[in-house]
Length: 184
Image 1 (cartoon, rainbow, N blue to C red):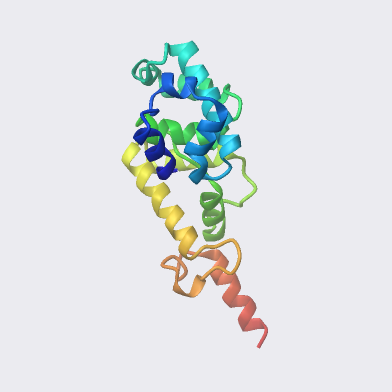
Image 2: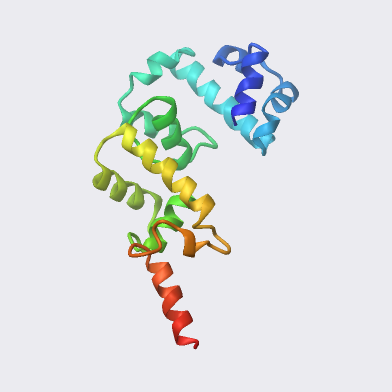
């Protein structure tokens, strides 16, 4: 994502009006490093069209919206789901909106804080109640969960033995140990 943003910035296209004026092929080439660039280009165009029509292209005006109101509007844009909307709110607009992704769901389920079959909004509400309304806390928590999941709590072949949460916190690891002991 960072490379794509740098590409847009270097070429002078990192503003809504310029993105709106780009043809598809140029936009594809600029955001290609992000992967799934054709889908992302369409979503970016949808977002920019919304920004232009709703706020006259003024991000500052958009930022003045209350978090709940802006989230609802973002979810109305084709291609923007709950995770994307919350990411835009938290990282783009500095608004307190916890991001729930697959890393979050997997890690919380394995350590036993959630069952794992809860819906997005249920997990989001649980985390926001648990962490308070702190933008900094949401960012740090999300970043730590992502790192933990990438390094240890992997979908396949988790590295439980070296995970900092395995001893005393992780129900997944405790069950794994129990199964291994029973197999002797």
